[in-house]
Length: 211
Image (cartoon, rainbow, N blue to C red; front, side, top):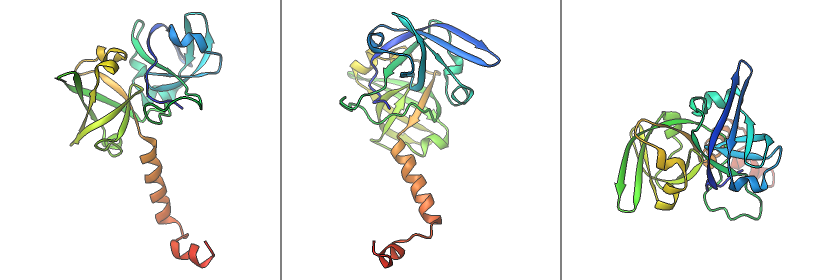
């Protein structure tokens, strides 16, 4: 589990790709002080498992489901990536609950400067937009952001200077794709409501049985 508060920006230094393998090696500094085999690290918002590490880098395997769901398949050597280690129970939850399980991708269609903030306007599929609400939370390449507005086919987020400078958002331009993870709470609520409609367990049933 993650918070969407990016710890540092790393760099892809190696890609091993074959018929049955997609392995990334990522250079980092800050997070290498406390990273171990088997740890979870969010790379551009994707939860990946550390399979090897050295003093200045770590490696992860990427499976087909992840390649199909995210933009990581387009990554190349020297690409900058957002990095966040999994949270521990004693951490402050500064962003929102982020699982690292990407729902899909979006495309930046407009970038607007607004005083000290930068707005990003992103298009996405309807299956993504259905869970995005004004003032709700969304993770863009693993960065926890607040939705400013939602229009037909597009939503926008406003980014403060610190977040802009300390994530890969500063490198983004119009036309770039991003990984999107919807707030999991909305997805669970939708699933529960859908299940409840099919269930024979009603408020009347519970009342009759002492609940």
